[in-house]
Length: 285
Image (cartoon, rainbow, N blue to C red; front, side, top):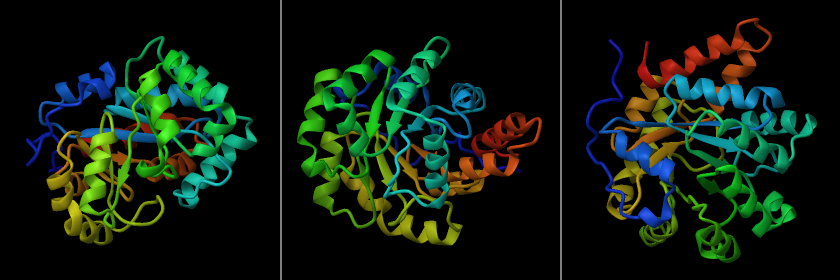
């Protein structure tokens, strides 16, 4: 029998920061009713530009609650080889920031699933900070994650975020101090991204993730009190998701999705098989 992600969690955050969360994101957490939130990452333009919206819609139909849409970048310092590869493929396909916003606009014609952009500050600055947030708000973006922008140095980005109503979502990791966790909780909107292990993205063994989570999850729950917590970095199966998100509000899967696409791509029914993988991540076999 598959383990369940639908049981009442040992902790559930009350959404107190209503001014720092989009209506779409707020609705997701309010209707979760104790069920774990599944946040899925896909690089915009991978495996091909025409696949992105179709993949997101399929993810939504198969259990995804939130989408992280990766903004391809040539030097993704927080990402391991898998997501680096997906970025390279998307860049070769000519994906630009305008293409990404257009994808979200197309998605919004039929879906209200929250979309969080995730990437690096260089492309945002190149596009123009205010222009980026303005276009993102028009397209229907619900949040932004920039791993290379420390919360203590986010001044201009935070200012534009508040001006245009696109909350910033910060990360905490096992080496984050209690004080920094509290600051992240104060500045984040929507949720806090809890990195289960130090290092770059990528699927890891259960033992490695378990040890890391055990060492710091109690501190996370003590210091993150205003936002929900989603745990990522290393989840590649339903069993991983159940175990790792036991004391959190949900989980994030990225590299495992990219790996699964690479494994299946070329099959005539690869999307059908891929969506079954997604459904299994959420609900088990």
